[in-house]
Length: 115
Image 1 (cartoon, helix red, strand yellow):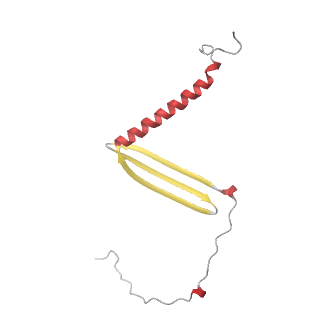
Image 2 (tube, rainbow, N blue to C red):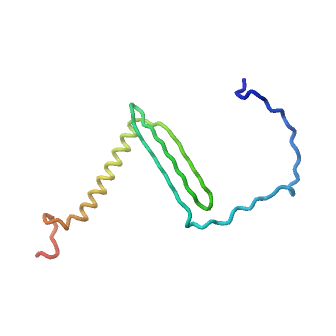
Image 3 (tube, one colour):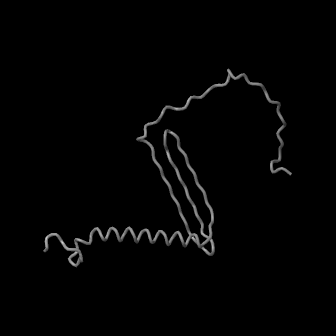
């Protein structure tokens, strides 16, 4: 049984003259000054599964595009992703602290003002 209670009657195809079809020209290129992109991704874990939710929206060339999805993945993939993010953040923090270490008085590097 169909999920629609009313069936539409079949209609015969009609012939169309190709000269009568209106051709729509694309819009002229928009100013790139008014373009933007927005993205959002959320990952959460509960039990043995991790839940992923993402949304992306962009406005470019006068056209608004939006995409969204949700899904589940294994908890081990979530834990691996969190571990990699923590290692990346720790590495970036270490580089930043090393760049400032010459300002500290207990730095092991020789300072240019001392012999």
